[in-house]
Length: 341
Image (cartoon, rainbow, N blue to C red; front, side, top):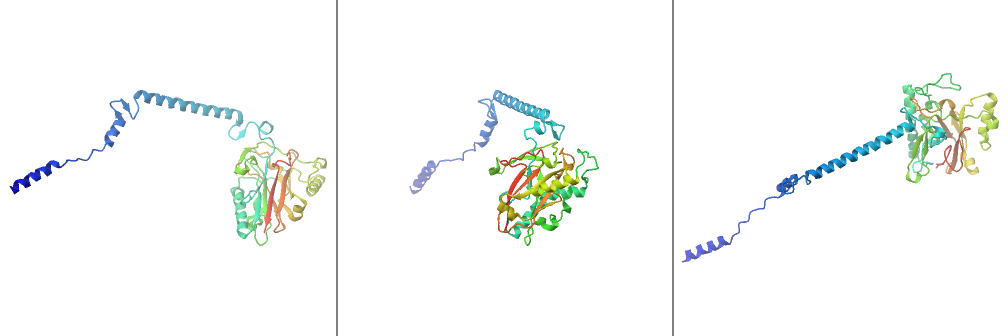
């Protein structure tokens, strides 16, 4: 009886058990249905007709996009480019006019127009920035890709293949061995002025540190050849220098530069100003036609004894008869500040 009761309990226990089998993963079946859905007649989620419409749409879209891009490129090439290097609309016919912009190197650390020399580390920083800027001038000198020009140049320049040499290595007191004047024990900083072969429009976007540049081709400076042509607002020192050259028939074919204090107080604190190798850009560097090895001419301006611990505001300006000066708009002149602590 006892055995029968045990057998009945085992039968009851076995009858109460549920055979649970793991569900088969649906990924494989779902993927097969995505690749080809027999019920819907779809391939990769679309019917054949839908795929034809999508492919046709994108083919037409990209064909139109390529056609529009090519048409705009043809319009640009036919109206503005002559060959590969020269714009067709030059000077007065262009939107940028005839005034190349006067700029300087080095620029400030925090603000481009502020040279704050406060320690030996900032002196080294400015020296390194100038060395980086002048690296192409030293490289071209080694490669001998430029020729020596002079006043007047005996060599008739082929402007497409030849360019005049800018010998920055011989500019005493403003060379790399001199630290470009940024020596902390006796600072006499040199800035390097250039008339850009591009016209930089950046004042509108200065807060956003954005600049837009346009190249000025075939600009030829008009030089001062008579004392009657000298502007009334030209600094006295430069006026006397040009007048002496006019009297002696000296090197008049020059775009002159001057640097002076903005106010009378700045003028007292600016000290002696030296121009190396001369007070301007020789005319034989112009016009700019994007010739082989061309680099913009430079003028090194050294401030030999700036008053220390006083912020000095300085204005530099380029002078030629066809450089239009506007005191309310920087271009042929620039302002910056120097503080030696």
